[in-house]
Image (cartoon, helix red, strand yellow):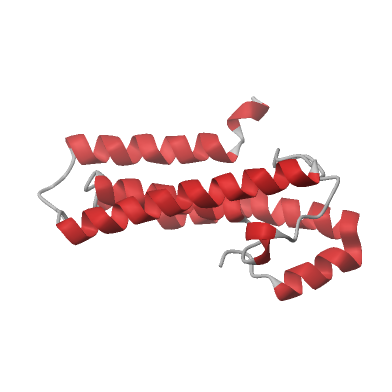
Length: 149
């Protein structure tokens, strides 16, 4: 059951709910507009790019990307200079973008829900592990780099 408690599973769950809402329960609410579609594409594209940049940093530093494990190295370079949680940020951007793309207006409420789940289930426990593992280095990093953006 541990595989169920991974961020991509939460993201996919939210995406499925958004898609179902878009095709089954639109309630005649719509944000459909060319600018909305452009914004949706930019959000999804940015999410994908940010996630790929983060994965490249994990590989470069030869540390784990698995949320429940203790990393062997503290990554503070690349996209991690701008955000302590680029993959989680990417997940939120992708969800927001696809909600807009599918015109799932009611499902936009899932964006703050996903942020809350990611913070409570993953970010706070990860940061606690990194605080214990990297002590002063993590404290300096956390002081210099924001959690999200």
